[in-house]
Image (cartoon, rainbow, N blue to C red; front, side, top):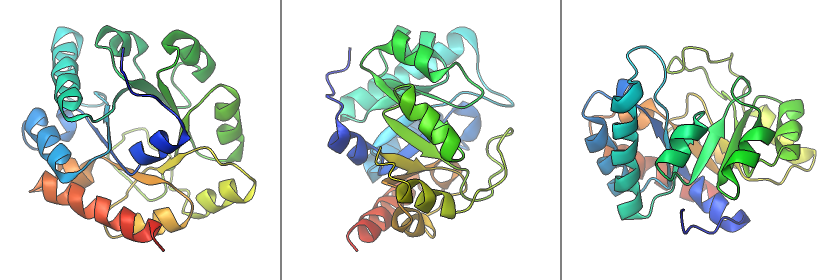
Amino acid sequence: MSEIIWNEPSIRKAMQVYFITGSNNCLKDPLHVLEEAIKGGITLFQFREKGSGALSGDAMQELAYEMRQLCRRHGVPFVVNDDVELALAIDADGVHVGQEDEAAAEVRRRIGSRLLGVSAYNRAEAEAAIRCGADYLGVGPLFATTTKEDAKSASGLHVLKELRDIGIRIPIVGIGGITAANAGDVIRSGADGVSVITAISHAEQPADAARELLQAVHIAAAR
């Protein structure tokens, strides 16, 4: 079991640059991409092996385990997307689920004190996620994205402001179409961090891409 103690400050810190990828999202070897991203300063990693060309079975579990070990060596929290069995098998730090995945309340029951993230598109979904025990919200897609084949239309940054205005204080990471150029806007709109896939996984230099995202987050948060 992870030794990370999850509380609001540690979760907010982990949200800063939240990197998501699977083998089919990478233009280079996924382990190399992750190692470079860690060098660049990512603060949390989510293993998401979904979509066209994704691995399955033993090959998927082996990659997940290797990525888990890499993150553990560098002290980077590791969560699994929508696969509680896999998360428990490789001793992940947490699980993230979307609205069409396993019910958040059931996931909370199964994973105990591990980190639980839930995707939310609007106020109703955000409030339901909190009631079910979410530790943080992944809000979006904020901008148009083609990375996720089942992605909803972009909500725009106003949804972040709306959630904060109604009193939601749970940590939030913005998702969907985020780059170093718009990351600051995401933070200024109310998010604690930014979540990206291709902004790092398709970058020629993943370490530099991660570093630029972290810098954008820090600059916006300091204002």
